[in-house]
Length: 392
Image (cartoon, rainbow, N blue to C red):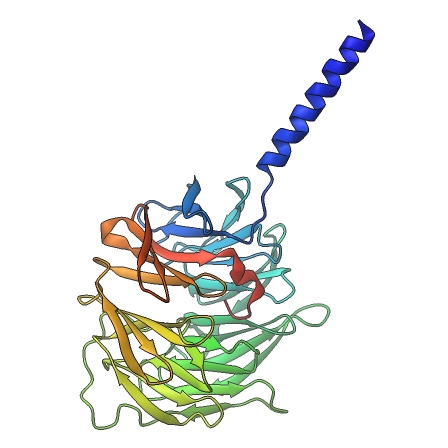
């Protein structure tokens, strides 16, 4: 009986171990799709092209974004209602959640993965949290002017050395918060950036921070490698002599492209992409496109740029060849084609089609549709592989 019992126990242990091994998985091929209308996200397997789970209770996701922990297991969701939520992709659950402000517009995670920063409209400023616990670390109010008003903050990105840069929309300024030392962060104010800086990007090497301006022509640029970084205006005349068109949705500089020594950026109020030399920051060309571009996203190898557009022309996607600067493909995936996300090496792109309640998957070489997922009002698509890249 004792021998039989031992054999039974051993068999049970082997069965449990086998079951657990079968459930184990990596996180490198995981991602999330935001369901903007229902306050939920779906966790996706980007290799198997399937939905693994749904996580609910995330608040107002009408303009949500996400970043990932260094191990790619956890996603931090920034909601429009000021909610900051940490979710576990493997266990499909909320780990921590806090309503840190009244109205928020995105966030970033530090290069060492220890800090999560949130950019707030109301009250204006940036709040920073411990990435493990979501306990508050710092509150940086965006106070400006003689009346000590609070500005909306936008264009928040991470920079090397536990630093965050952001723009003050109302104040027209750019600030940097440096958490590299002990104690409180050192906040540097670079001064006047221009009229209504609305969004920004940082290059993959952490050197160049570029902010778009809604209130005037041009962009604001800071070289962070300079001995004394300062704001310089670039592309001041890019729209000179051209009639500005209505802007129904602001272009996103977060959706930008760098390829073959050139930046390719969406223009404000013009149906074109701006082509800019990445060393001199001078305009070297334009690409006429279908309508007001929102995202202009480079395939990871830099050979293609995929472009989507604002309402009422948001059913169309165009693909630009970065060598010839010609449109090589155009298609209409459906109403409200909002967001594009490439697999890490760029062999596929995932595309949200909000008003069809679908996510489409395409081969980026043949442009063939490879699959469709049913997702409730999808908007942002974010792959866990973003954890390895700066500024995302």
